[in-house]
Image (cartoon, rainbow, N blue to C red; front, side, top):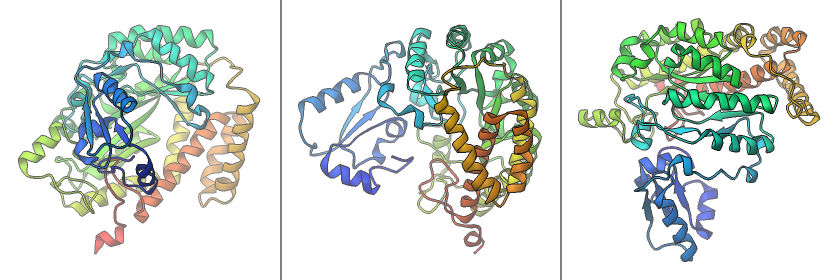
Length: 445
């Protein structure tokens, strides 16, 4: 199922719905259960007493209920009591990243974010032993990279400091079979003790919701934690520990002006962040932003629009800003230049990880060579930006940086193609938007 308003609308789900009971849960259902009228059973909230009741219902009732039923969690199951996910039922090798969770919740109250309402401001935790047990199963499934899906990996910095030595010991004992990534607030750059331990534990990527390079906008959205050190200094600090920074950027804020796009583009170039999720603002239910806009009468139906917000700037101007930002950021030479910077100035700061038998298995080597072959053919020979590709690829090949080359080329190709589809009007500009934006020529009319 997709984001807001997706319901059980696609053809496959509709066919299944004729034969089977449809049970939905998760963040979107928990936030907006009314958007899913075609589901038979809705699980609202986290794992807990509602989970037990919904399983009992499925065990004791046959067929579909006459009307949709809602099961809402009143008592959450402590994360320390969570069962180990059934990783053995998942073809982990087929995924770019495996996922694991250590904590849930975030202490901050960014205006646009629904995490505090859904999961609380006091992060709840699994034990280090739980995390290591899950990593054992993830490695057994063939994963090479794992993303900590915590809302904020340093939401409880004391707990993070307690977990990291266990991760380091586990990685050393298994000869570093995994590379880790996570999401954290940008003020993580101020805690160099955490950064040093994360580097030693095998973390290589951190997603930070930078949102905007404009300080007044960060204050307006209650994201002052991003202002505890200059943005570029924070990014460079993370790079110094070997962390590739991935950033979220939002367009359509009340503080945006016609100059905002220029500032975003300047920040992208100056920061050399390769991957940025540049999205148009969308008001989620159960957020301070939703409540404020509702009081101001600025929430709109989203049919045919990329957002449910009546922006301060003209709607077409916001879309034009978004298109200009992504087209500039993901012009082939620009994205490759940022990646080359990170190969030279960020990846080189990572630990010299020991050779791991599983990571260097013939199966993985053959898979890597197959990916390289497809890249050489599709991008290096047939691609319209092949000169840009080879300018970056040849030095990496000479240095034996095959993993960096594959990562750079695969991700860059996705970003370039995604941007071109957006420019043609076949991709959405918001994770929550119900449909793709109109192409630029349609907007101009």
